[in-house]
Image 1: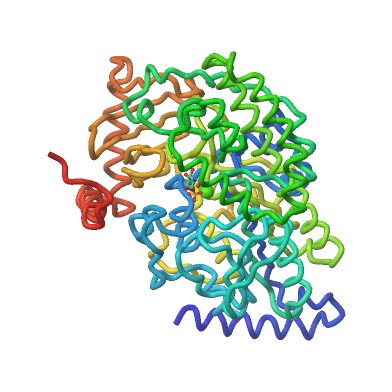
Image 2 (image 1 turned 90 degrees about the vertical axis):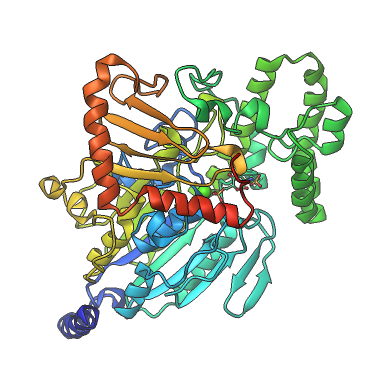
Length: 543
Ligand code: SGN
Ligand code: CA
């Protein structure tokens, strides 16, 4: 009912506005803002120059913060792809919308913000990676990658059927997006989700970028050789260490035959198979271009490998990893620039909110890791840059604890649509407008489930404030960790059992109980999700 009234109000308001300002550009008739949600996959904030210029310059992504706001404490509620995307769409924690991991399909009976915006008269479109196992609801048009999608010559799922498009995925997703913008009805506001696959593993850059980035050397993180002392079992047992778990073939691009001949110990055959299947997708011309650059890298590796010790091999892997990962980001940045230029040239910038974020953060060698999943900083935090001319002051910064949980309510408020009462986030509009006194949140909740599974990061939930991080790892362990975020920014010392923190532990545990209640999470639900894994044979019964 509320929605219907809202819709009527907007139709009337739009009509009045249209009559009064009929000489305005057509797109602004209704007065409601357009919304462009740009999300990349696994884009670490460490690899955006608005946050840090140690690794790469991203001038186009940075433009969003220059013209708007940089959030320095944005985070996710569950650091993995599909759960994060479901949280973004529904405004609910993963235990509520049910998409706790990448295994089970999204329950499409959930109400999502695009459906509400579409009902309120917005044109809606989605291009790129969704990763739900089913098609999105609430979109006038979509073209999505099946599952993780491919970097080269990717397939797309559309309502009309599947199609393969020749070329490089980041460029193609942008072409589709710009094409739709050009074709849309100018009299209606739009909400567009422009969702990159890059820089997701296995990090295949475009030719123009691998030529450039394979020539570069990058600074190593302080904790590349972390020995995980001072942390718990979960950090020690996670399978995402560059030396032990990153594959020399699929990840570092050494041809399987070269790796075999050298006797490199791969974690499993899987890396070889992934490399072969990705290489097989290339056209003959793409293979030739690839071989011209990666062939010499293979030759050099064959020379070096026999005399490499573990630390030299780790360093080599780190450089290879960064060259390809950052090469993928270069294409994302260029293409974000294409989109921003399009908005400028077509008079759309003024009335469009543009958001840049990632579905979660990522380890770029910190703690010796790649991948994500943990409540620890590099995976828990995610980039967030937003511009909204006239609402957000250019060059502003917010260090509030905002979450992917907040997007749905933010977009609904921006569009003047009432959010359903059961959404669990908080609209960021007040923060964007500089009304910081209206922001009351001082802690966020986190819960990761996908265990046992890829990379073997144990199940854990926790709570994070600006000062502290408290986490409980459960299921096959029962371990608590506490980090003092002010004194230990690298999160190297679990102080949970430190007598100096007895009072802090007591009060944070109490607060954690309350936040679990507030968000309707519980031990019973934790057990239910474990049982679901048992039923599906994803975990064996405990002895
Ligand atoms: C793939 C990756 C993993 C990654 C998961 C989830 N392996 O399985 O490293 O953790 O996706 O990523 S890959 O080499 O086959 O790409 S997510 O972003 O979809 O959650
Ligand atoms: Ca991801």
